[in-house]
Amino acid sequence: MTETSDTGPDLPEPSPSDEQRLAGAMLSALAGAATPADTDVDHRLTRASVSMRLFGRGETISIGKYQVERRIGAGGMGEVYLCEDQALDRKVAIKWVLGRSSATAQERLRREARALARLNHRNVV
Image 1 (cartoon, rainbow, N blue to C red):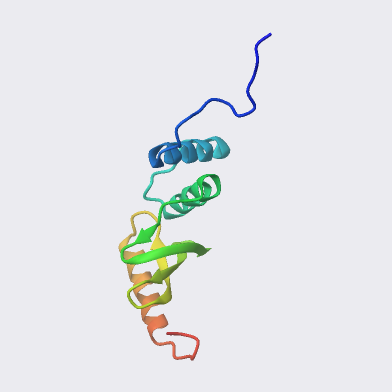
Image 2: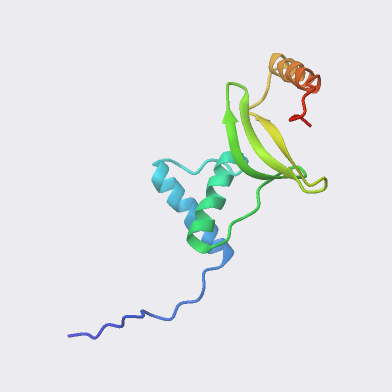
């Protein structure tokens, strides 16, 4: 009969690249499909969350100068994320337009931005 150890073999701590590969493999297995491209913000947030839960640390996700905190909504044009503008120490909402946008979609986004710019309310900065 072979003796077993309760502590197991001495193994090195996982590296950040090991953690990313494991998190990606777990997400792929859970989704039952290939891992989406790393340009997908929602996918990157999920990977960071899995890494945080498994290893106590995860990558910081940014869109330009804004640090992404979480997704707050989605619609026909894209997804909206709660972000932090660290330079100005304030929360902002960033709309991430999905796919290649047509000229019509770009104009619709401009109209939406102009409408939002006209808002004047104490809870809107």
